[in-house]
Length: 335
Image 1 (cartoon, rainbow, N blue to C red):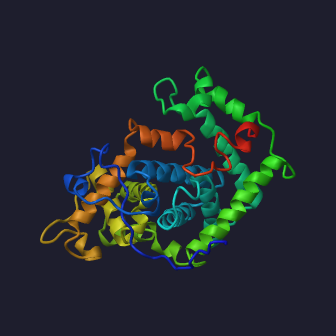
Image 2: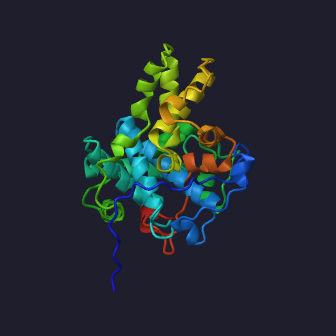
Image 3: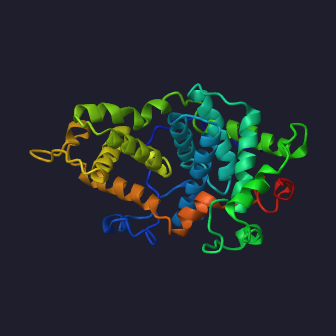
């Protein structure tokens, strides 16, 4: 008998994912917190593995948004849809590649920045080839295990040569079986995401911290334009992990401004009360610290999980392999 998915408008606050064993920037108080429960964790997936796949999915979203020339708000919307989807679905059921495709498609519709199905599929196929070659990564220095067997064969190629390999692939035919695989995966996951999130996504664009940055900067009378730009960048970084579904956007905007001011040596008033209390109220210092540490942890280029998520192809955790896993039809036909 076919299973049904309960329709629900998901605006709930969810737990933050972090790797307490490997992340030195996580506070001792956070490490003492009990394990968080997500659908993936209930399927036996460790928090560090779930975090890796979440990072992998959002890095794919970033690459796709850049190639499709989507604005930052559309990228943020796609990441919010992505994280909310995985707070209701397990990585054992749906791979991050298909979910990322569905998130880009839905985000472009919600933000009224539509992109054609054809352009989305070609973009993700291009990213797929780049990830398998690990373009931009130092293959001789970083190793991620058996999944990088193909990349090991390309270890003698420099990035320019890898780019030439990617460019040499002929455009995918819309009538071919490879295109059909990508298209089927995209349409199937779009329906799953919509059912999972209750067919209600209109509210997501109004929940991004980006919308509060310029207002807060004006209220604080910060004349340094670099502070606003840096704060905007930190908001983009925060989309990589599930901060967007745990904390309200006003707090995220305050964190971004706090970190941007620190980087640019801009001092803000802390007496008689800290400046952020005007926007988010009192007793939020701990939340600010947790979010700051979580964002800073993403900048560690020596962290293997961060690099693997950004440059490599991470095989899915599906019980039956995904449509583009090493055992799939696409793996041998994508080139």
